[in-house]
Amino acid sequence: MSTHQSTTPGRVDPHDGTPLEPVEPERIAAVSTAVLRARAAQAGWCRVHPAARGTVLREAADAVAARADELAELNHRETGKTRADARGGVDAGVGTLRQYAELGPLHRGRALQGSFGAIDYSIARPRGVTVVITPWNDPVAIACGLIGAALAVGNTVIYKPSERCGLVGRLLGEILAPHLPSDVVQTVSGDGETGRLLCEQPDVDLVAHVGSTETGLMIDRAALATGAVVIRENGGNDAMIVDAGVDPGWAAEQAALGAFANTGQICTSVERIYVHREIADAFVRELVRVARRLNDSGDLGPLVDETMRSIVHAHVVDAESGGATVVTGGRVPAGSGAFYPATVLTDVRDGMRVMTQETFGPVAPVRVVDDFEEALVCAGRDAYGLAATVLTRDMAHAQLAAASLPVGTVKVNSVFGGAPGGSAEPRGASGRGFGYGPELLDEMTTTTVVHLAPPTA
Image (cartoon, rainbow, N blue to C red):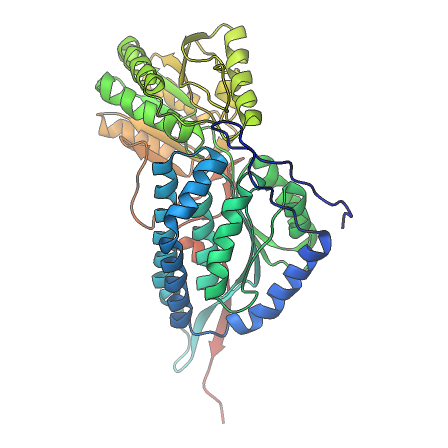
């Protein structure tokens, strides 16, 4: 194990650069101790009746709801998320905790009849000590989902929030912990080095991670040595296909929502757009109009910090230098804060960074295609596999996209949304394992099969 003491640089409010309260990273000894304490607590927590665990989760959800405004305001100041989006994330987290409070007691095994009087049945058992490593772009909702599912089936949790939202993570941990037995949920603060140390602990049974592909691969390497199971939802480079025959104005609104919501800092943001030549000109005009309206309104929040803004702008500069046209946006604004305008690019080519990498900012690169089949081929030619959106009036095209796109979620005619309790399994560089919904309970448990036969004498 490394002896490095991680240090987290001071964070500032991305709106105006005002320094925020520092969050000190845990020392190495504290990381090891947290895992040992989680192991000791798990022996008792897994014996708690599932209905009683559900009651505890409902109480925890109520506690988060009671402090929703405080969590949202802190998130707004720490990550730049708008107040409305930040509050929506807290509300989603509360709903997810309540969902798993109900689903946990209903999680069940299966049975198979053997010879007369004999039966095989399966029992779902908790994996044990679970490390939950979460990102900054929707910190409360994602953390509550992973923590809630782990607790519902009897795991103990060590929660490490992103160092970019250490204050939000610390507060969420302080709200949750008093409603659970000692050490069933612990919060560990720190950066990527702290996360690596956690993942290297031999007593960790499961790591659940939402964040960058680079971090996900680090977790995979650590798990090879410890034997821990890894669930991870990582980066995406989500495509949107705009088919012939759709209304250009409606399609542009959908594209703008997908590319610019939360300033483009959503795992399933629209990262590249393939539009049919028949409506391309009208679509681009409408998309530019929406982008300029958003920029003029002042409603677009900042990026999480200037480091992220530098990455986003470097992708735009790379595209422009390679022949792309910046139709609107694409310039770092003057003044304080980490703001970046909604940006529309045309004349992009497939090899550009805005088309091959996750930009994670308010950038909409548009590539014109001659037909739907070409769009499908281009959309599927990608190392990631998180999600894709198809806007079409043709049911055959929608079904073809669902059958052919190598992604976890294909969204037809709605860039965001989905059924309550829905889940998806990412592909490729976007990760693996169901990270949401009832299927997450399966991921967070292991199965014991019992063969029960009658006595012979």
